[in-house]
Length: 510
Image 1 (spheres, rainbow, N blue to C red):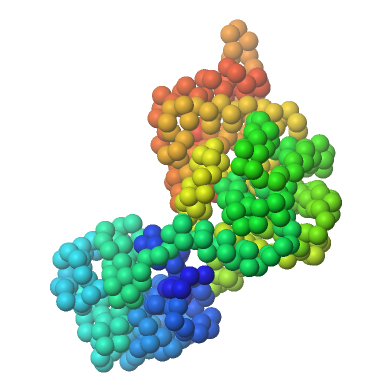
Image 2 (image 1 turned 30 degrees about the horizontal axis):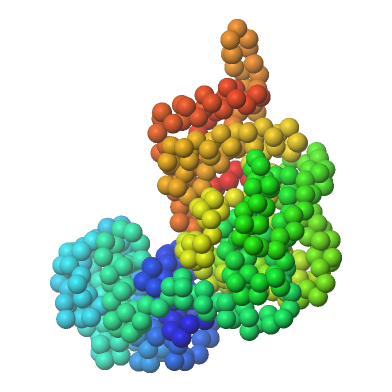
């Protein structure tokens, strides 16, 4: 992709993506690969990082990292399990800790002469998460930091540019973790920090032109950030060779179909709008089971898209808005993640249409997609739009889908999102939405008793959706939005607020 990168070998740590994100924030390109992937060294690889792991190096079937292929050839940083593996591989010893060290600690007795700790303060807070400890270090290494509880918090062999740390610099609680990673990737590895939106755009446009040449490309566009940024990149590269298809599944937000089409027209994108709402809703009649709803929506989308795509002559490529977390999940050290829910995308279309795949965003995290979108001048109405599920409101309507339920939830969602924007709250939230619950509650309106539906409001903070915390919206706002929903949306007499975090809950309810 670019002429320099850092490779991160993933041994299954929950924090591996965080390492990549921190490195990317330094404008240094990096890739995550499984620990057992054969990666041949070339001039583009400036350094290697070995992640943590849920496994212990003392277990029989622990991940075997090809560490000797890289140490002494490029700078190497082992984090937690990576550090323990390095110690054991080269003749040191690792034993079970007298007690688990989990949480905050402070590194002391720093070797300030070691380039890894340049600018790092004595006593700096770090985050520990391990049940094993390095007891003795291998020959040729020296201890470069301790904590009050462990005598080997970090060790290194400067002659081979091999560094090992027992703590996690990638997590928020390691106060100077980003500085430490900067020391490694910039000073020790010699990276030039050229991973910028402008550089990405220039490189990607050039690669698209080289790949596509004079062929026609079809893109399923949704109104979301990912597909919209992909469309702008492709449009800059190949112009009218790109044909976008925007399908209205009848499960979009209020007025979203017409608004999104108008926005795309203003961007000079070649977009075909297909209103298939009746077809989708008809196929969902009397269906309540969440996974079945998803599969019906996915199949209907494929049917509609296939019909429209076959009308386009000389199409050779199918563009997709795949982003880096999707790629990481598919190559996970533990294999593809266990299915929690099926995703609604264009899966299955390449086989049916005999199209080749092009994925211009597959190297980007979500926040990077937004930065690229900003550089491409994507309008804020799309750029700052909260993530919205592919199946749309279908997975925010618990139970059977009907036109009346969709209309009701559209009205509720519109009031909620509009008020979040009016109060200056929308841009501080990662994702917000309303859920229509399959229950009725007794209410009193004037002198009449009502028996109407309940809606739940949801708002979360997150970076990539993998984890999320519920947002502490002001009580005054919740009171105001609840009152407005009940007064303006006939059929709703009770509003609740979801205060569950992910995990153990999910962001969506289905």
